[in-house]
Length: 351
Image 1 (tube, rainbow, N blue to C red):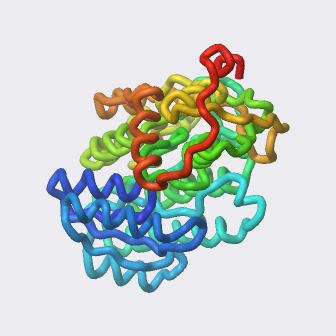
Image 2: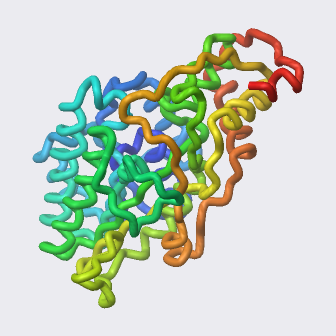
């Protein structure tokens, strides 16, 4: 099929483009190469993909540019849109909230409008586990309510799900929203914990653990995310005839609209996560424990049973294996100066 991937130079986007081209799809990409983090990493991701599967059309367009997006749809006529471009990051949303309104709300509206004017067979878009917000019951289920987001980033992702439902209901656009849970792996974003933690440990810098290290996260390796997306492409949602207006299921609809969690389903304590990074780096961490940060969710755990029923697949790569692959890439790409020899096993476990 002809597939448009937005955020094609991003972490998940680049891995998606690689997989889709290997599967024989015609792929075009969109990315604005902004400077939220070093754009060189984005260029290097694109070069990595092209080295393996060849060049692909990649338009340098900002999501806020409605006319440029519409022209891209007119030119490439995608059958499927995988919308991964967004302003990411929970903490940055406290500093620059307007970036989230522009990219995640107005930008998503432009994608929806182009899907309406140039009908597509399936729109798959990235949501986030952060939409569960203040919910305390785990594992998080797509049947749970998500009415108490804890950050503007989470609020924009919740809004995306509602916006997609409106367009699905009004214009019949098949829309699938994917709530990603703590995605990690090679070519990840430098504002996320794997690169930040690995850099601190490798260079002997202080590693700050918020909430005194008491968080637990449901880590999901990038290959499991991409496999899930690849399987969902040819499974556009259908209206659910069982949907009950008096007892509405939050994850399905009378419209062709669906939500799925994509998570490892095995939450790991933050200190265990750090210990695994120490093991693979061969170094010990210097830890500083700090209070909970505004906008942070305490614990995450995905119920991915709906995804398994729909696709026959659920994330399966264990954190130890995934972090080993990540560290191999990290050491190769960043080649950080290594300091502080690994502590004795008993000392490391005491952390």
